[in-house]
Image (cartoon, rainbow, N blue to C red; front, side, top):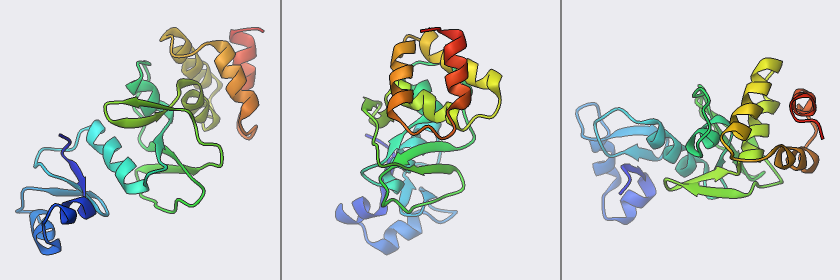
Amino acid sequence: MTSVATTADLRKSGLSARAILHACTPSGPWQKLLPGVVLTTLSPPTRLDRLRAVLSFVGLSAVITGADALIRQGASLPLPRHIHVLAGTNARRAHPWILLERTTRPPEVVERHGLRLAAPARAALDLARRETNPRAVVEILDAVVDARLCTPRDLREELEAGCRRGTALARHALSHLYPP
């Protein structure tokens, strides 16, 4: 069982709003991670707890992408400061440690650890599109191919299917690393 719960789910299980609020006070046994999302332990939240909280906070259309999605699927990359999440165009929730990207083209979803993750090619290119350092883009593409999460062909197909905005470095790196 996960230690992350929404206040709505806690209310459905029979807890009053007042009991939930009291449990989340500094002297209580729980902690508020995001508005409407609670960690039902006193221990510091893990990255997995934070990922689950973000999915609960953003809503049913939310999918983790970028470095967190790739790391959870086996790539060796540094943890980012923000959790990058894709959601439908009607998503309006924001928070300082969430990078919310609205999309009309939902990614293929991979389920891991109870998380909805973007497929590797999409996650890699979502991460690469936000990168301004050409060397970092190469490291991202190498990491997913080296981990056998996807092939250069998968990356090319995702580049062609997706938005072209921000993909120049990824296109350049892919053509030099893995010529067609």
